[in-house]
Image (cartoon, rainbow, N blue to C red; front, side, top):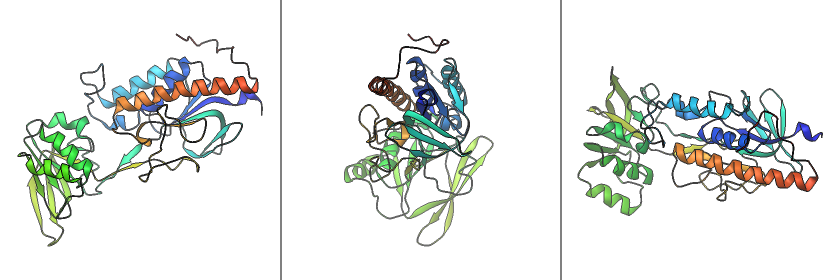
Length: 327
């Protein structure tokens, strides 16, 4: 294959991590293409306000996504608007296959496909996302200072997020479908000891209700009797799990039991030249700033990998694109 037909880097996913990777890849003079089937920015576009990204006291999610994209495009980033259906690792190069049948070859690939919070799938949930329904207490808890909120779930994440919300909200109700929490004992003890927290046992949310200003209540259903009751509430935080979008991860790449990709500190996977970043990889917390940091680290690591690989096979790396300024 003609070396000119092989990209240095393909980035799959255009969220904060993917766009950050694109910025650093372009500044490193890598022949890069970013593939995203939807609007650049990923799930950031769904956030009404972002108040924890450095440099912005508050910024609309869509605006922040646009700024990420504009920054990457300022370097002449090539973009493809299509769905990736498969990845084929190879000895000489890796191959990305698009839904339209196109095959794109690259020395390195950064997977920035993110993940998806598990949903309740009840009436009102989807329509009220960002209007009182949230899947991230750190992201949105500030908006519920002095208000009453519900946390759905019984595991570590639900308890941790509930304890965080208890520092801000007037009262936090933990709604759990069983009569015991699944969280670690120390978290259960903290929940029990917090005067702002109350566990609603054997209950699920059957419907989320709202008025013109957003969520104003839920319909709770008892899992034993089936009886329903209305509960006034200002916000609903759902923590029943998070699913990584790992359907493109090739066989041979290590994942943990929850399906998150295991990487080293440079975001490199167990297959040379393939990186995983953002919500796809195993990590302690999931925040926009951390995804952006992952993108930076992976792009810098990929640049070193590609330069070393090209030198080993005798490809000249001295000539840079004429329109690129590298600082």
